[in-house]
Amino acid sequence: MRILTIESTCDETAAAIVDDQLNVLSAVVASQDMLHQRFGGVVPEIASRAHVERILPVIDETLRKASLALADLDAIAVATTPGLAGSLLIGLSAAKALCVATGLPLVAVNHLQAHIYACKIASGEEVFPCVGLIVSGGHSNIYRCAGPTDFTPLGGTIDDAAGEAFDKVASLLNLPYPGGPSLSKAAAQGDPQRIRFPRPLLDDDSRLDFSFSGLKTAVRYKLVGIGKLADAPAPQLSDEELADVCAGFQEAVVDCLVGKAELALRRTGFNTLCVGGGVAANGRLRERLQESSQQHGYRLFIPPMSLCTDNAVMGAIALERIKAGEYATLELDISPGQERVSK
Ligand code: KG4
Ligand code: ZN
Figure: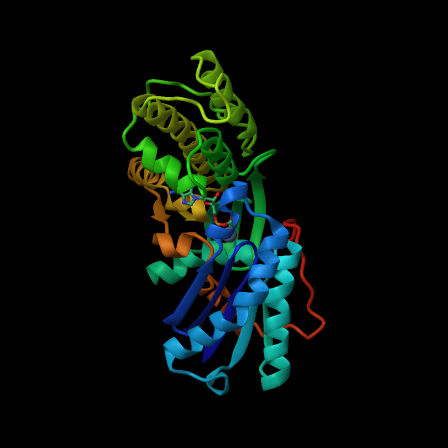
């Protein structure tokens, strides 16, 4: 069995063809970073317009790379929740149109579940049950994942998502968009201990929530405090100061993520942590989680970078729904909010 999966939840237009052994026959991602760069964040209307232009070329390219035709496929899967409404609609409309044209069945994908499923695809191992940590531009969530499509929320951010905090602090520091990669690159030269930023909610072990907006404000105050925000919009930091601010900020975010992941593992009694989302591409987070897993003796799964950021390969989770006979009808609709994580 081979399926085509389509992903357009945010600002990546992506498609992939995977078989029921989780082999990736082809995968294409068209990033929109260049389009959103000058705004310092994703502009929903620009994103949906770009999806309209790219969706069919991306699907064509995916078929071409696999040397397959639509007639060689067994189902079409599409991410329908959560995401930007306009962006989701483009992927869903394309998937429905292809189903109508070919008679292939339609399968719905939950984008958050797909991020965790990427760990199974990448490792080839059974990763469930596990604690799932999803850290991206739009989400910082922790789940008890009993199975691939059976998630119970344990905690999440009460304000900014982790990636959003990276993007906003990077923008404050005048670093290029997307902020995560550019900030972590600058942080690599810095001393993570020289400037200590707060670790919001980390000492509160009664809850598994995150709060990153105060951290962003703390960076702003730090810049004002050392007289570096007077000549706004761009603070005039030396390379060394910039690196230390970035390293200190990154360390604070990483401490919060690692600390709450460890707490979730203790609470659930699970012995496996799966991490997904764009921020999971962060080198320091990966390093610290490796150390934590060795210290506490749990199994850690973090996909390679290309499967951390948004992609369509992780849509292979649709195969689990197919196995369970859970096909969608052409009445399938988008669900932009993130509250529905289990079936
Ligand atoms: O999962 P993703 O591709 O898209 C969604 O938000 O769904 O994640 C994008 C986010 C952005 O906020 C980006 O700055 C962040 O992931 N990111 C990183 C890194 N690479 C991407 N954050 C920290 N360090 C990185 N290396
Ligand atoms: Zn995502």
